[in-house]
Image (cartoon, rainbow, N blue to C red; front, side, top):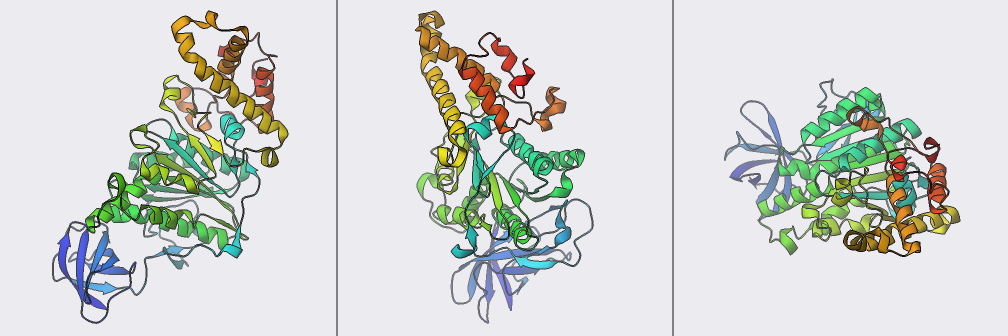
Length: 454
């Protein structure tokens, strides 16, 4: 099927077809005079003979009257067993300077999620070795986890630490999907994974910040195609990391505006809910393998009620909220213990001991937060004996829940720590029962388990 370009509006291209129209989401190819190819994706049928497409790339060198060829289906990416340890772009082409894949299968990026009877529910807790997460917002195996935070509070560092833990602790496979983030960060991640020797257990897919909105909008679908192949064909358990969901929503917004759709609430695209669901509903576990997904979500202007952020919440099992206030105190990871939570925080899922400890820790930290105003105005001496005890414990707990990461060793000079859940619970119980009341609170800062104090 052949067509002719009739108009170019930035990243939107109108194409005229005389004999029938390609389907929505079909990929079209345009050859530039220099031999390079540009791929278009069909988004609108505007008449019996005309369509609107979004370009997956830059439109320099295109002009009216150029020939467009239909590929007869959606964009397909090459996938094979040898794709691990590699970095790809949205088209499945390597960007790590190594040769292209051989003996591959072409997989369409648009797919329906597995039917209900083939899906399996989340089972068990995935221990991360990060104290505050294992204690207050445990990760379900095969569930969805969201990391919420403004700019520069440590979302990407936390994601990189998870990749390290999964590769070292579980020998699991990680797929990292970088959507609209800085390429510098992607390069650092790639180099760091090579340095730590975990690159062969990972696969990276990037749609950089400088790419056209069409590419950033479709990057998650390419990464999902890799994840589904590894889950269904290679029967692997996958950790799927996405950085950043907000940039995906932003790209969808740009595409929507370019296509001339009317904006909805706060200027976002009217199709925001369905676009998010298209990605989230494919991140499921089947009988073949599990997909545990960890998604970083940038919070614009630290406003957690922003529609782009609020619409991600219903899809998640666990939410980890990073706070600028806590980062300003120098407590890392800067996770807000009171806002972070998990659907699995119950005695049935975690056991009585874990549930009780997490409840008491939250109670102490919550009461300490209430008392902060009184302390700053009148001083700690004005508090009752019971409240003074709570403040003393809460300050120790705050410091005990900090932890040095393996991936920040060379910046901080502190050796990374992996703390088993048992040791975390034991440490919190000792602080709550005042068995460590004689130890100065500084001794709890940036350590692993309480054994280090002794």
